[in-house]
Image (cartoon, rainbow, N blue to C red; front, side, top):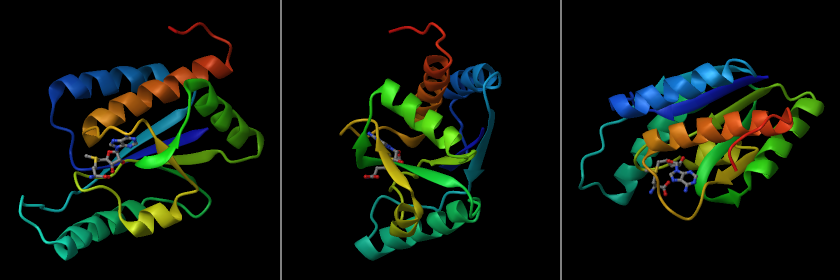
Length: 159
Ligand SMILES: C[S@@+](CC[C@H](N)C(=O)[O-])C[C@H]1O[C@@H](n2cnc3c(N)ncnc32)[C@H](O)[C@@H]1O
């Protein structure tokens, strides 16, 4: 399985980078995982609604340029569908069974994802009603994808 994690902006925080690198190392035993960072758009504190839309649209174009036509897209969105770890594992297993071997998980920037990206998504996945910083979301997502592979292989994982 080829998994892309597409995010907006460069990861700067060392403590997150260490965690992300650790899960990428663990995941390499199960799948090919690429982390793609597209440039973020400057977003000062005081932006009008239309300026915010413009920021999201520009970031969205950069995101969509990285998504292949045959890729199954999972957009991370607060308002998306919540799943248990077992349900996520089952979804990944089913995608592999039905020949969907390219999957992109997309995490938005500080203002979220554009409508175009959400429209392109095959599903929207929520990790709760809470808002997480996008770089932390990347670490949490990688841990859950790793957990999903462990579940699907029947390997022990921490409950
Ligand atoms: C700082 S959040 C953006 C917040 C923005 N107000 C919104 O509603 O999307 C950055 C990105 O992290 C991801 N994210 C944050 N919290 C999430 C959650 N609870 N479930 C799924 N994705 C989340 C989403 O992809 C979001 O676009």
